[in-house]
Image (cartoon, rainbow, N blue to C red; front, side, top):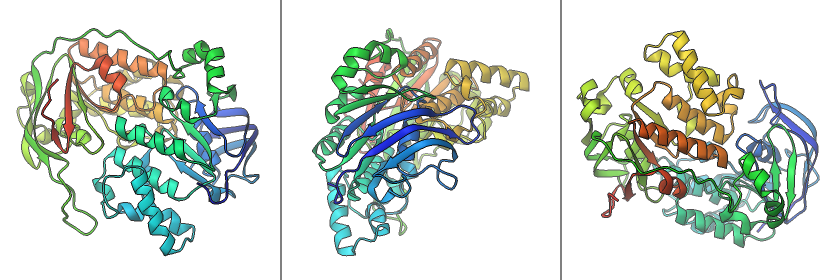
Length: 496
């Protein structure tokens, strides 16, 4: 794939500490990756995997996207990572951070233009890359109209179009539906002439793509390294205990089925029009069209379907955070006793007191510079005093394994830690209804199991819970009702 051939990687006693942190994300890392090797990088949530990928991409340093303290040696293609940027391509964990243009084709072309390719070469590469990742629209598709999974495909296309010698992939299929994930894995399997480092929690699905498994630990270095079968045979039990997703040792918490209670939220013919494209009003399909649905107490209702089906948009309407353009979303039962008006007309404090929401992109809901303050913010806004807010924050920090990060800036957390913080902020005001977009995104095996157990306990205590998810394991373990979606509406088989 790479015109210049694959590149090697060398780290010697390397470490990185984020600005403002007392502890090191990684330290004492010794690692050599030969040109053309394919490596699966594993470790528990917060082990520094994303940090290492950013460092290899040349994005750490005083004037880079990640600032902090560095020690030891890191070389890519025999040069500093910054000097070797022309040979690397990074697919970051959050596609929002990499989409920069208003139209899909322009976004893929952006990197090629910055590397000085001739226009005659750029657009054939753009078309081939979009086709290769199964992007279902033309080059003129507005990027604002894309779902999270569709943006992830776009970012992958833009990175592959660069034909890097070192491909760095951070959870590249996490936002994709099962069919999309399978397609991307097939694309990666066929790539030749490239060095690849992959971070992925769906280990069983990607292990055949790699030659080697490298496991890192929080604040330390490499704790396991070798052929996948050898590493999992020799260290499987230990790695699973650390939180690594080990094939054949995945968590399986026992969650008995629920008996759903009365409805608390109803969508009645609810729909949202498509946003205007780059040039104004366009002919984009509406993200949600005339949906009738309900959420019930003491039950987990799951919204499923392919990328772009409208799951996140419907979830935001059910949360009262997005006004329907047609139809309405109204409270029912005990929730209507608080306020009978449509949810989008509720004051912000009332919404926060009764409904807790987790956005698809965790950063979108962080409003303070400290993890502890994020957890205090909601309770204080809804009338709690300082002592109550502190007690609630301490409880959630311990419950979701974030206590060691209480003073950290939320934006410096790993993807899995950000997701747990976003869940914690949704719980901070003790709401009776929870609406969660991909709540298990980026979680290691241990924290995944703990989150599922926590949500099951909340359901059993009477909470109404809605999740939008592609996590099949979450669906089979926790979902009481499933609402499949496609093309902005519920499919004929809903509800099952």
